[in-house]
Image 1: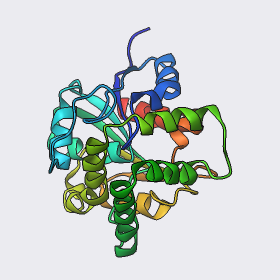
Image 2 (image 1 turned 90 degrees about the vertical axis):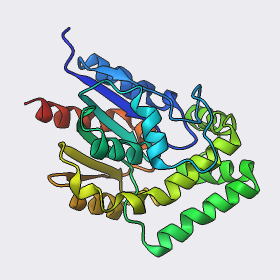
Image 3 (image 1 turned 135 degrees about the vertical axis):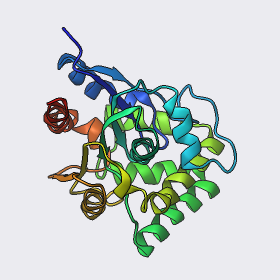
Amino acid sequence: MTSRGTVVLLHGVGLDHTLWAPVRAALEAEGFRVVTPDLPGHGDAAPVAEGATLADLAGRVAEDVPAGSHLVGFSLGALVAQHLARFRTDLVASLASVSSVCQRTPAERDAVLARLATAEADFPASVAASLQRWFPGESDTDLLRRTEKTLLANDVESYLRCYRVFATADAELLEELPRITVPALAVTGDLDPGSTPEMTRRLADAVPGSRAVVVPGARHLWPAQQPDVLVSHLVPFLEGVGR
């Protein structure tokens, strides 16, 4: 089968490339070449230095992005993808932001900084809190346990440095979003308390020509919980870019 293009999938903070296994398989079955790098400080990637910025993370990720790729970023990965779409136009053919934050309100910024403070004070407690947000009412599913294992395996200092980027970088990106020129899609779940439908609408309003999609019944980790639904939105978007 002839490749329909390269899709680069970028995971969120505290996770790794294994998040994308079902999405990767589905996209490959559709004829796309798929690349799933670990973000800096995650998985097998090298640690992140003190004071790391979004530009630092994006610069390292750029080394793994073939020219002309379709970028699909989840959460922190979405911010990295947006930075690359703005500043590395040679690498990016299109941008899909999945469960992205955008233009946090003061209350939303206070909430994420409080979560960062919890992680700095008690990392295992912050992992438990994340699992409660992502898997409400669940206690012993395979995905929950695999996610817990991935989170607890993090290099804690790298995690904290990347989480600080996640907590603050949407503010620095705000004035750059209108300068993104590639085709763009913004999509989130209607039950996501951290990457809310309102944020996705703000993002779509800020990026010229972007479209917002809100998925009913989806929580923050829906790319892993409902990969078929994500692929059902990505494939038509990518086909439209190809045309």
